[in-house]
Image (cartoon, rainbow, N blue to C red; front, side, top):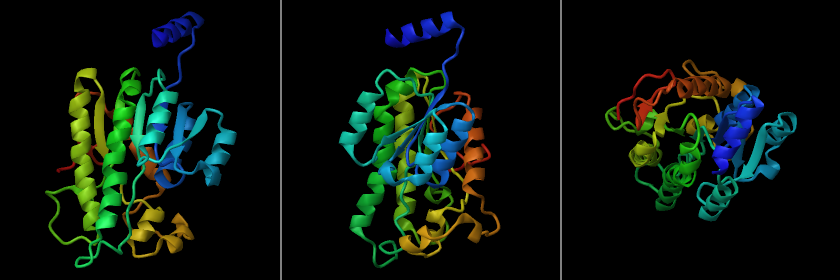
Length: 268
């Protein structure tokens, strides 16, 4: 009833409600760029982060762009997810982007030294987190105009493409798992016309990429994207723009699909 009343009042005033996007893991890299670009396009952006109080770039953006709202959210904290879902109850969310993710670094993923603790951590962040966030905000997405749920995945999770050993077997397992997790979300929400897609962002010059190159978290944190310009890589800004283009192109004819950042299909 509340949503119907809001829509009716807006129609009387001749105003259209701004589209809304919720992005998890918004404090840096692709997430921050998605927030920046959607905000510049006039969207109402709900940017979530585990510790927004020390996210200087995100805080500065929110000061400049009044259509950006920052919320605290650790995707592994069920109480925080429930609290934010309660706070946003009745708010339509056109696009939900599950961007928060964890690489895990190489220690603990080397063959012969696999870490059970790291496995549990990556599965919690990369798999159950987006699945639970999608469940928590499913009603918000279903109440919107666009009705789209996205997860940032990776071709490292493609079973059919796995032909050689990977230095990140736990990460690869988590990405394959999140594809299936979001496929189940797609089937759960199909009757509500919600479209779910898993997107490959490209090889992006972010802190996570430095870690993939063997740097420690501390070393990677001191780098800038301009110091790492390997052929075939793209900047976080370029990745975010491609992701936004693909999200905009999804027409609802298919759900539970795995797409590259150019919109082409990726084999599982």
